[in-house]
Length: 162
Image (cartoon, rainbow, N blue to C red; front, side, top):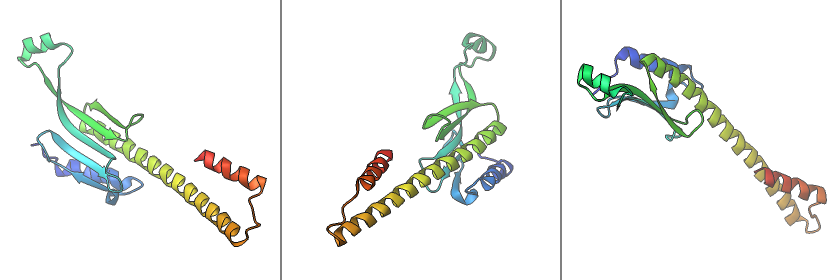
């Protein structure tokens, strides 16, 4: 089983500490299985994760590799992350642990952006619901207080935005 050194684990913690959520916003696991090196998950939503693991691949020059080493597969470092750069879950090969740390920095920034965007949407939705409830309460208190054309158009426009 791979075991991450204390120095490398400290580097991971430092990057998480520098992030918007600090290291308290993430869990870090090592050595869960024989190929996993490190798994970092966002505490508020565990669908967000980044993982460094060993994987194997067949090189494009398989004949040359087999002739030289007798091996048909090579061991590589692979990063899998959600949210990815442009797809929900993506994976790619990295050349070194330093490249994983670069990916970790980008991933924490992406999580911050997604988290803040979702919270902004939620705040707008809650504000709209409060405004709608207030107007409906006014209508209930005064049965002659109907929505004006302008208020109706405003409500339909906001509903269409959501």
